Length: 359
Image 1 (tube, rainbow, N blue to C red):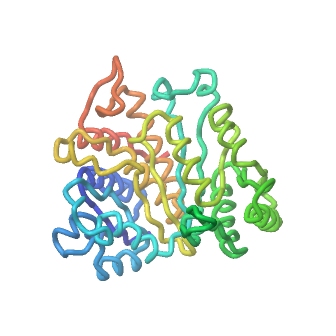
Image 2: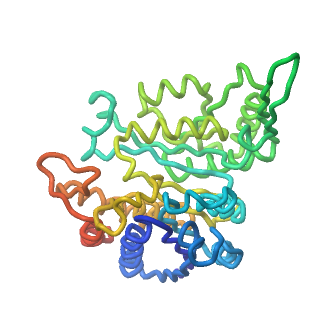
Image 3: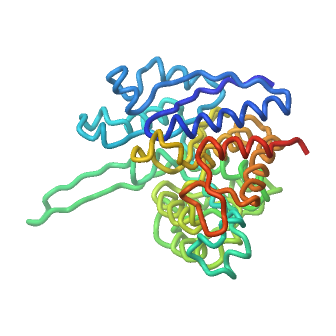
């Protein structure tokens, strides 16, 4: 199978971690008989320096025309003084809008080898943490009307939370389809005891469930979900929720894993062309020092294979290789612990490649 991948190396440690992910993809292609073609795309601070624009139109066009996009990281203090509408992060917002991606999917997985890094009690961690939060990305209160006005002699601020049936349905389908590729359990999170928007959310999700009889759908109020994530995260497989709730819950979920450098993410829309990136930043203070952790980016590439290219065996191959390297006690500086062997970014990539094999 041949796939065309737009590659955004970005800023800071971005080029280093992306390079290791590409080497892993190349080895996977060799093992399974695929061809991955790469097109370099400038976005973020590097694009500002080169083109005076965080995402030139021709670069966006390359992403839209690709089968998927792999992104390292963008931004850094170097570009803090540029106008707000030209900041590196604006390139990312334009990319999401241009690609039409409305679903952010962030796994929360505790690797058994790093269990001691979790802030949760051992008996909770031992039950397992392996779920994914599917967050609606371009609607809800963040994209509703915002205004501050004078009323009766004082300021009044209003932020509007609005969703249409079609907006809920499209993110709901992402949730159900994701659950189908995992353990067929979907938890819909809302606040239907208070909010009209959540009551509509719940009604649409239950209507959709009729189309997915193989997926077990449950409902949970957002405040209860926040408690359950730290009390019993093992109960979750796929969680689907609206923008603000997902923003908060996904950050909470990332913390219970104890290692931000290990967490990948994807953003998906109406097509299989997705945007895949680690959740950490560009870390310009360690750029070029070969000490960054490339695993989050490598696992993002695995997500791309699984969710955009329908290559579950190849994705498993990468994830199993990462686990095997951790079993052997190798760690980058950010996840280093007593008794382990510290390696750099490029060496971690080589070790993972050495463990790739077809089952």
